[in-house]
Length: 127
Image (tube, rainbow, N blue to C red; front, side, top):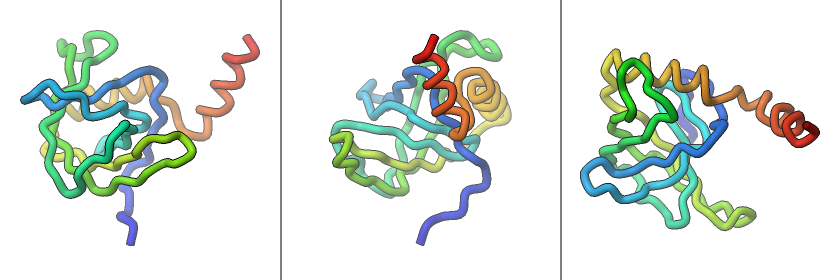
């Protein structure tokens, strides 16, 4: 049974790499995000039902921060055979008000609604 989403995810318009903030290990690349969750792709499968201490570099300073720091719980992981990668869904945990504000601004500036992603990509390709 799939979980009900409270907010709609938005497609990343750039490279947003997620790292373990304790070890510095690369976890994966964020492909879409909402205020309460994210999906990333990785070369290796990610353990499900695990809490990850995460950090993500921001493309510019947002609210006096250059990094987004949060905890995320992996909820599912599926192999995408067509792209030869793994897709993993995370629930973001314990967000402070400031981190919520950073996520909202980041999504507004660097993520697009999924329906707009295709038209934006095709418009850029034509330019």
